[in-house]
Image 1 (cartoon, rainbow, N blue to C red):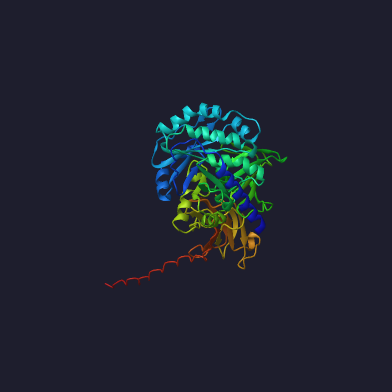
Image 2: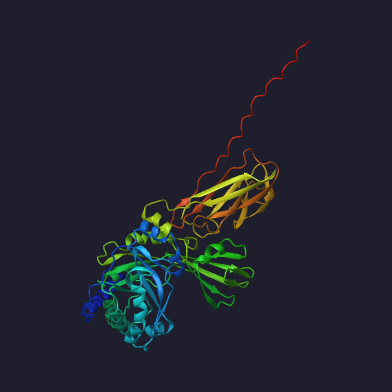
Length: 491
């Protein structure tokens, strides 16, 4: 492992030397690159969130990366946000259109100057029109191969030449070449960009922070918090992908069977699958019986460790780039408010509240709510509420919003309902600010006075465990002493 790390740093040093020897770009005013943490939202609909700018202020973000369209040929722009951003600079994120993506991963492709010229008018309007607010830069989130890096570098230089003075241009970096020949091909591209966004955590390829800093280019360390799901037909054929917003609806749907995927050997990723037991429709997503959705969810506990360690001693790092999907917080498992908890040192565990109340003569209702912005891990066994109904025995359990249940005797052993004294209700995922629809437990026998004591357990996606002791039901009220009957007077 040590020899491998040395090789990576040595390769990066060679690449950095090649960068310094690359021809300088045409003289232009130096770009004003914001230094600090930035936020990158990948869903265009997120720009309409009325609370977004206030959240950015609480997070201390120095810039907001927003999707602005696809490049080549010309610019296919995204609609502008409903209102310009007033207090935070915006960076317009461009993705590669199909033709350009092919050109940057193949040996042939369109002329970079022509592409830049065709996109310049629309890009200029997006920057200077004021619809986004103050635009500080343009970010190119393009795939590329070393053999096409020269063409990409020419495109970057051509686009930079048409940007307003002081506007920076950055590119995404998801891999560093290992062969010296490829490093030389990529060097002019890295030199042409004003800054890099290097993906160090999340689903997909990563770059090494030490090797990235050795390039001696300004860079942000990108942490991709998005969950990705791949749809697999019963035959195993891929049927496309789904976003993380489907994770919570699937975890609480009885038509899906949940299973951990132990084949993924990566501490930074939690992997699991949902298999449709029957045909199911969730919004625009339709699945047939037997279809599987294989999810990869970044492990928040590992991300938190890397947030504190990856930039230590890195001289050229600008800060961190936190990447989120979803139109609103409700569509994110780890959201902006959860990141705020991290940055401000707040508790990083679900704040669970449970209650058990009578629901008729021989039944109780069970509620569970998460009052925090922190989610639990996704698990069939770690998140539950247990209710003690002794001396009664459970006869029927209506799950409500819970996923499944088990019954136990007084010694904690799984038994049949007729011998059980407690019911444990499981929830696969306790989402941020989730309120679970109440379950109803019907019993045989007499419920205990002050019914009923309960306890709950959960493991936070950030690592901490929530496991308070049994609640103590309130004592029954003391009956008032009866007054002696008044004696009748004899007349």
